[in-house]
Image 1: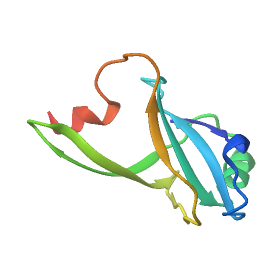
Image 2: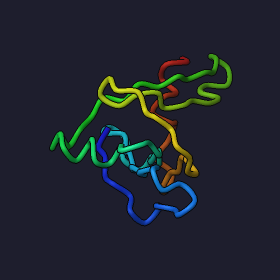
Image 3: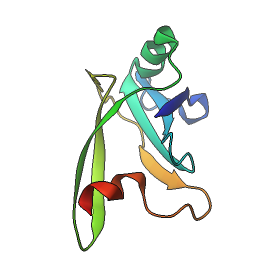
Length: 103
């Protein structure tokens, strides 16, 4: 996934939580916002534009992907310290990128 720090989502309620926007390389219309302790700083220090993201996803063949949670980025667990995480999509890009795992 590609990533970008999301300073517009920083909140005073969770001062340690650094928000990052993640977009799927193959379907960039899908976006994930995740908060983690030092997350933006850690990703900025790597200078990588694309990172590997580990998910815990659940679903089945008839309903496809039902839900998921981001567990780690580039093999490092996310230390959650608060913040409002969400997923969004722009336009009508078709099935969610994780749906292929439940076909």
